[in-house]
Length: 290
Image (cartoon, rainbow, N blue to C red):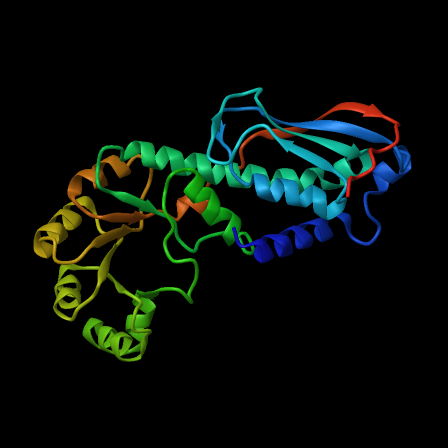
């Protein structure tokens, strides 16, 4: 995972929660030297993801907090399973709790949905991809979670892949062939060119003018079936728009190569995990070894 992105996300999230004053509730109730332990517990069946963000959140608040992972990202766990244990200053545990949970719950939700998507197309050649429809600032975490669930990443951003969309085509006069010509002329030489089409006429034009991949945008199953026949394996086809878990098995039978599913990252619900305090005590911390 790209650590600089993750650290910035954690810093921003903590700043939203702690502000300039910090956790005034814990400061009022808990002595600075009080220590405690806590467990990260699953409250439902889920696929774990975001554990690196979980650990780094505690260490951002207090480098002396100890976090022991009992499970790994990508692992499916059942309710009541303890995924991690934490020990350190009680104030630090409580200050980091909400941010750490927000990140791991969201990541686990994406991973769990991705696993469900892959299960629904098992045995087919269809590859399920994510999109750029991620919560602002959370793209690194979200795309890592997609992989933990067994699905695959599309391009990370606008910088690492050419994908000509309908607005790009409109911006160059509405011509698929002209958009492809310009992309081939000015685009990076080693980057594949994908183009979005909405009908079979555009598809034929895209194939004729050398698209590397064609995205079938918001086509129904009958249109997709015709597109597969027209393409006849000459160009990989990606389906986008209106992709749901229920629809995935049908798409897998139509012969397309990819589906991009924005719901993986923009509609996955946060999974139910909690941080439960398991012990509180005042005792001197163990000195760190050199």
